Amino acid sequence: MDIYYIAVIVFLGILLIMVELFLLVGSVKFGVLGALVMVCGIVLAYTYLGVQMGSLILFTSLLTTLLLVAIAFRLMKSKKVGLQEVVTGKVNEVDGNLIAIGSTGVAFGDLKLVGKAQFANEVFEVESTGDYIDDGSNIVVVKVLGSKILVEKMIN
Image 1 (cartoon, one colour):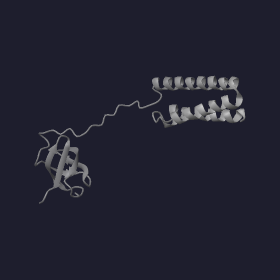
Image 2: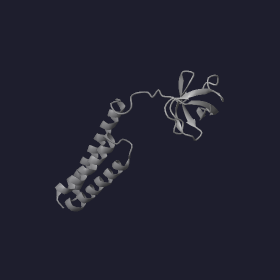
Image 3: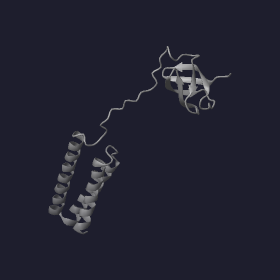
Image 4: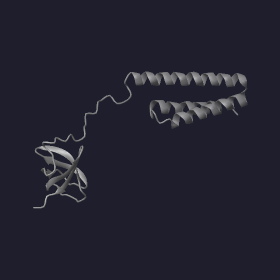
């Protein structure tokens, strides 16, 4: 086997490790596959090119991989990679004075099991007891379970 083919195999392994480190952080599959491909290339180098060339390819590939890992960790530490914003969303915070069994409101969009409703000028995520409720329909709270508000369409 020629040195160029072995070099391509080792380079492919390093490339897969780079994909893992820089593009798909945390998927592990590409890193493991890259390591296996790189080990196969090194074994082929020892088998077909001898101990001296196999050792040269081994140390070169290990040095390159360690350098790439160091660069990846430095990039992650410098906060150039990853989420930098804080998520400020929250689930329903049900005020017992505002929402209780029997409270009335208006469907804020169609309720196809789950949707939004307005109670006393505040919008909450609500869940229908099973019936489809049209936008703008008057609704009544039938049960409050923590942050979950169950509603039904009011019968006039």
